[in-house]
Image (cartoon, rainbow, N blue to C red; front, side, top):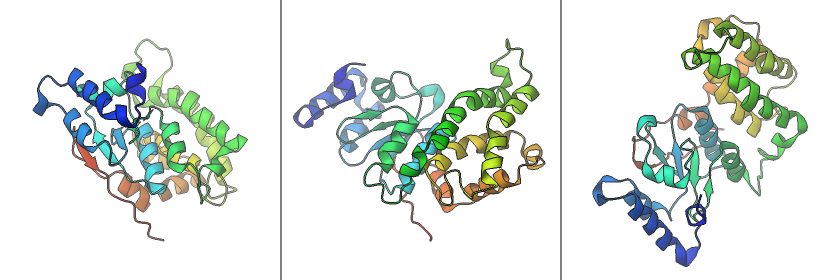
Length: 257
């Protein structure tokens, strides 16, 4: 990616964004880049997709950290040129910061949200070896198995049956989570941390494929943990519906405790 797309600096910032706007805006009133030009200095802009677990974990972290931000809710089949210019990979989440920096990975966005002073320790508690290992498993083998369980039609040439992928996902992550949660309320200990926010959206996605089947499994601690997050005010705010293909300020998370 050209450096001028990645980061801008003060006096050069308006020039950079003007170049970006001109490159993708043959019809000035038809492209959301005009909104980006007028709003980019005010708040971070998160390109998001409501049901994507990666985007969900980014929103959860930013809300919990009391970060004010805007979102651009994308349509997968019609990704905006501004997003592709910032991040050619074309996946969400992508966070454009007011200084022009771009964060393209959900965990980087979570780290930025909770960065110093991290007074409540949400990020710090997630940095133990055990928690980092859980994240690697979740984002690696478990995500691969989850995709083949949830979207078997996408992998017609693979020999793994759907039920096998489901069993593998259970053994890879869900059963170890159950074992951990039998001894502590949250993944990082007695209080929640960024690991809970990072993994919860993927467990939610797995459970939603066959809710009755999931509820029948011997996973009482994991099911209680999942139900707690699903019923939380934080998750309710996280799933607020935003205008599609438009920039909008995301609602603030007002803690109820």
